[in-house]
Length: 327
Image (cartoon, rainbow, N blue to C red):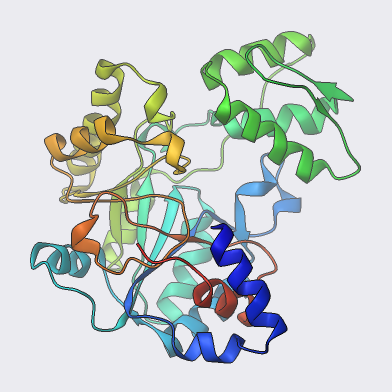
């Protein structure tokens, strides 16, 4: 990552952006989205919003022009054949299962005649209960603590002029802490003694997922409770991997062989998790780390994805794809 940043900086200074873009390698490129809309409009976590509907429309037009978009089924065939990509392939993925994936993203995907994969945290589907990160963001927005330190944190966090950055920093601390997110929420609620409840969650229902399949989209698993898998016991890990798969296959009458790791950085999955995926019948799995997958067959359970962030334009996308590592 440090080398990629240095390469990007030097490339810009030397006027090499166009060269690196035109000579980007063959391989599997994956884009990862979460929510589609405006983060300022939600009572929950604004950091989960990848882009607006208008930005998604522009991103997909750009992707169509410069990549060959493939489905998960086509990717799995590539992996099984041990083929090295001879083109710049692209997979479009969405994580979590928010309702705006259906109301906002699906019409734009259909407009561009593109297929995407939706990785679902099954415990959130059809539920009015907000997930842990949305609860934390809601509490920070509502009570605006001047500073915050929970048990297990290495250091406290002092609020700044930018609440979005504060929420991002607090959620990073929660993810890094050895304690469960649920226990940290309980401690946070105890600090704010007048917590009266949360707004309804903003996730899809099962009929929305069925409609996605009817439109030619694909469904993968994203665990059941969206817990950080490396913090779980063996029994809890097996449940998260197997129950989400079984529930999706039962409710949607489809085969589920792809998985994306909740949170998805290197501390949130390991060899034990990967072995659990193999034993449960998954064929491929995605992280949330940028990079080109030069040979997906060599790392089928460690496929890299580029994150999409608000206000990214075509130039930003080009630089992201041009100056990155190969895996």
